[in-house]
Length: 93
Figure 1 (cartoon, helix red, strand yellow):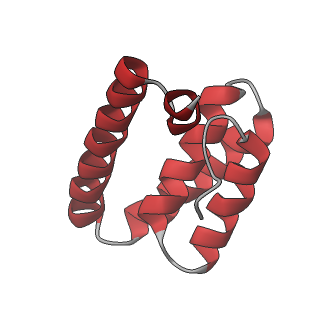
Figure 2 (tube, helix red, strand yellow):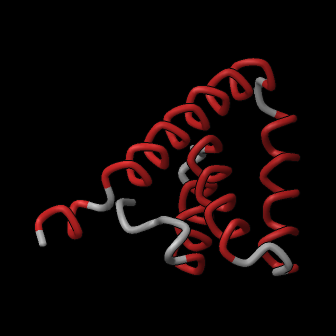
């Protein structure tokens, strides 16, 4: 779901819901974090993140935690790149 990002918190929320439905808990957590980064005090986002964490704990917690760390590292690398070089749109202009 390519349009899920911190710029679009509600799209990220829906992407998170879809990911849970598809049993992709890593992406679900990543997308809900985008939503919460944009709107940290949204109660619905917070409640859904807690629901995802519950599902993760029921799954294989060690494997999921490893995957979460890897995805968080990739996100930080992307954010650092964007801060240094700007977005593709700005580079083209």
